[in-house]
Amino acid sequence: MPKKTVKDAYKSIFKKSAEAKGPAVKGLDFNQKVDLQTLISTYSTSGFQATHLGKAIELVKKMRQDKVTIFLGFTSNQVSSGNREIIRYLVQHKMVDCLVTTAGGIEEDCIKTHAPFMVADFRLDGAQLRKKGINRIGNLLAPNERYIWFEEFFQPLLKELVEHQLKTHHYFSPSEVIDRMGKQLDNEESILYWAHKNQVPVFCPAFMDGAIGDNCYFFNYNRKPGHKLVLDQIMDHHRLIEMTLDAKETGILILGSGLVKHTLCNANMYREGAKYAVYMNTSSEYDGSDSGAEPEEAKSWGKIAADANTVKVVGDTTILFPLLVAGSFAKK
Image (cartoon, rainbow, N blue to C red; front, side, top):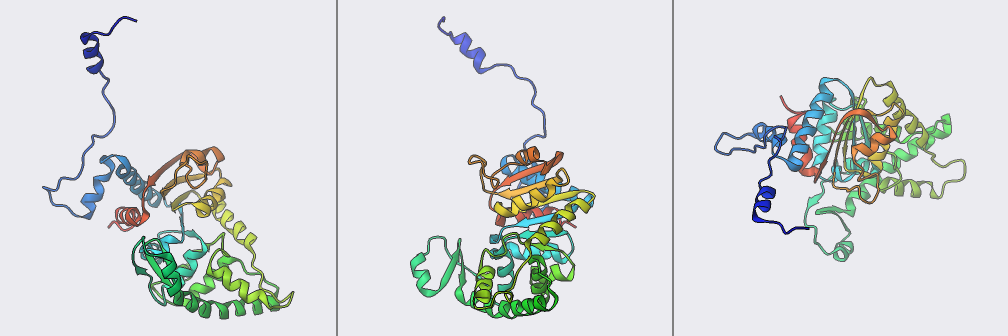
């Protein structure tokens, strides 16, 4: 192979190009007046994850314009954090049609009507916290006192449920129990209160995974066979699937991943996929997990429609979700 010359190098470096297509990259000009909506409007042309966030905002606006049935899924840490108040706002104003969360998302919403969690640090000594009876969720603190209160709130409800079950032979589903919890809370700061009031179903496919499960274990422990509380998870599975089948079109907005993400995607598989999908999480696809899977993978299963509008925004939802809501649901 002949030695390359300076002329060859010049031609390589200054190779002629075709003209690239797409919007020009342009960020925020702080020489101009800046408010929240001005900031949000620049995301779509800023590049990287800001552009994905800009697309997510537009997709949510399109979901609302098209009046699709909106399913909001969120992991429990969303309720641990300040995103709880934002989710409550959406349910309060009937901006979403269905919620899917984990056990922590249910019990922590209840607990926060009693007392708050506290902001602390990610690097606190876990052993020392354990001695003090304080639990850590990232850089948030949840004292055991909160869960003692939850036991006092939840145990009488379990007694009511089992008494009704023994009289009527009706086995409650988790969503029915959650609805009763919202009614009993009677607190306008609560997501579950507004879900009950506005008849927004709340599904929890892992209802036993947390303090709820702990309470159910202790409640049933000394009860005789035939007198134990039994919950019907299949009823909720049926009800969620029927919601997707009955909808004209569906849109899914999922904060975090794991079981919540799969439950919503799987339910939409029965209708050959959701029309819109917005993911917000920090999971990667490289281990083959459903948590990290991109929307294109869900299309291969029929969980998201082949022609659906989709986006995955990678990042911390405590930063991303307030901006998304400000630019879509809450935009006047």
